[in-house]
Image 1 (cartoon, rainbow, N blue to C red):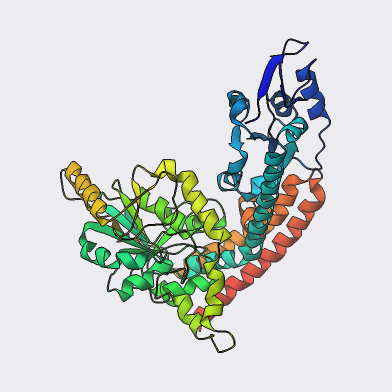
Image 2: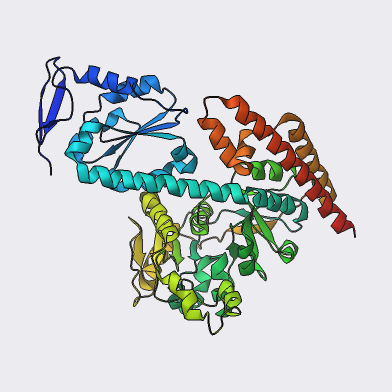
Length: 500
């Protein structure tokens, strides 16, 4: 640990020195901080200002004055200045930088201004270099996510239009008091299939989409299946879903799913919510997440007062398959294996550390304090997870029995399972008319920011960063008109196909 010496400056304000290097002026550290902030130049309006190791944090007051609408964040290289953390909206140790993305999202990261308090980088050179390498990775990851949203935004909107028009058998769900088990598709799910079957009557079972096939192959019928992925590959997992399917409108659905029972989910942060509501389709509020397991956990906790358990939530790489078998994507991939491109070659990359799995695991770790009172990761007695999810306990089926029995005893009456009920919705013709009316309205008025964030996220991010918004706003208007015209044609084609 670097030894830091504190003393009074000539102005009477506290200053400090470390390894012979002054972290603040010996004369007037407040004036020094004011000059430092005055020299900052951004060619955009930052929504968040992030400062690496600001030490005594004199600059915070001037940053708040200069950027009154921005969130102020400090990244610490040492805990020796933690008593000044109250001067910031949020502080992180540099080893926790990855949390910024999961807490604030890629839009905030890409509209953030990053600043280094330069004396600190001389005192903590290793921490400084590691920190800025992590910042570089943070920004790159955020760009990748925004790129994904920009690429798939059009497809997700088409999915939403199709969902609102084609849904027939809509359902809602009422809260219960029973225990809930989530079946994710990690390899550890296989070890719990027997226990799930033996204890099936003690809980409400939710299958994540890729966990559905292993359950059905073991003769286990879930009460609910949840799918949130908007990509076409997600359709393979739910092609023949025999139970109620919980999905947001933007998810990818094969045509036959619209003949089955559907529980519409609504994130409430974009066009999906507006279109569902305008079409009179009841929906259950869900929490958007980068992984279906996060959305499924939030859903499970909201539909019961009881404990929630997850099987197959490995969130780490394995030496063989990354998913419990059978897996529908693996069934498809097997058909492509050949002598010069064998299965072993195809599976090898899956055995390497995955950045996506690390991000998903970090989300659970970051949220674990909020979940740990009612949520447990479950496996058999002879299976141990190779990672930890923060404060979330890893338990076996004996502990499951103890926790569930105690919950049932504390209730004083038999637990009530969440109730799934069919809902009446307007006919398809009425919904089609409503959808078209909404698109024509926005073609005339322009799209609200909530829609732009889903359809043109890159352009919206550029507009929010720009100091001259007029030019980019014109491009957004042009792209919006073209997009809405295409979607109106898409809606008309669906209606024509159904009329045949």
